[in-house]
Length: 161
Image (cartoon, rainbow, N blue to C red; front, side):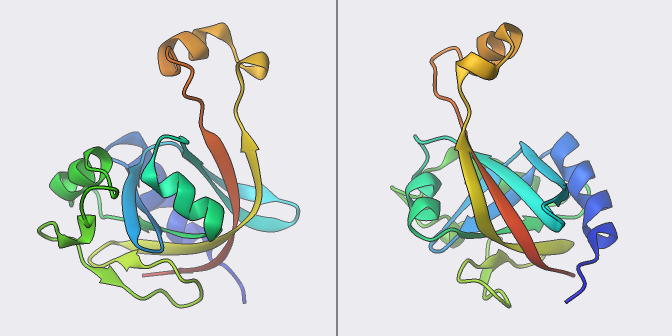
């Protein structure tokens, strides 16, 4: 299957500059604002960052499939804010107004209905970020309490609207 990254790239980069996008794993959704899109190992790759303190972390560790649902520019800001602040340990975030889970095409993680574009991924590699390889400026700003992310490099299996 040919993956059309052009369909994803514009909305993806716009979302990362503003409110973020929905990262879904089986049974949970969170907002992700730090992600990368590109080609590695001859494959289209989506890299997402998840902190070990997040409920999503345990799920993606157990089932290394995820989706990215990218809302249209300026849309779903309230839902993105909620998905980024509420914990899936405490609530089913898909019960929040305007969030509807839809079955994806190739992976067990759902997508969020009403978004502009979707990407389905399976993790090929994961790596913990550490202070050892990071600029002190970034450590001080993004990780003052030492809660470094784990990066998940997911092969993009499908992109669609």
